[in-house]
Image (cartoon, rainbow, N blue to C red; front, side, top):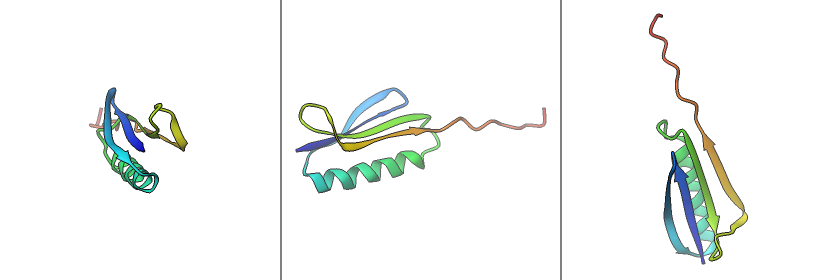
Length: 74
């Protein structure tokens, strides 16, 4: 059994647990897509882990967005 965990802007959470391998991969890629498309996520990490909290199959993604610089004519 596997879990999908994430840390977004310093907040940790278990997003899904007790998943088989296929379901974990689908959920993992969905979370990565959501976080890559969320402008409020400055720093994120998503991973599939096993019962020993070890990353499974290299499924660990770091999401980094730099804050948009505003140009207000100054």
